[in-house]
Length: 191
Image (spheres, rainbow, N blue to C red):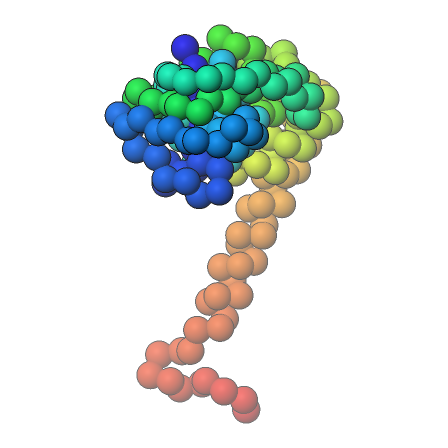
């Protein structure tokens, strides 16, 4: 199975528009300009590491070329001069594939998977980097979920983070309340 990643509008490199079920070909001789895809979801995610990334199963139909990358993780990408977009993968399918492939948690986290998926990383979520990354990027998690994900030795950091967040929200609400004019316009403006 081969997988290609796209942006939220199913566009690829240089904003080339794709559609599920269609076949695309190019007459270019340079593999750099061909259609790129990966042999794993992790590979595809390396090239489109955003929350709204979409993934499709693809079928290479023409000449192929293999290239090795060592940017974030060692991956092998492929290119072909003819490709068919077979079907789009659901978010659950992508999360399952990433777990099966042992995708690093910090890379999978770019997709903002649900808590249940992140919890399966278990002991991988250790150290200062994990704490900072999870707290900074996963505002959708509750304090209980943050505590469940991160080791007990970091729970004080989680409590401080959530306390600061609550205080900041209260200050914001107070500032908005003070900025609103009083009823009927009376009392608005300087003395």
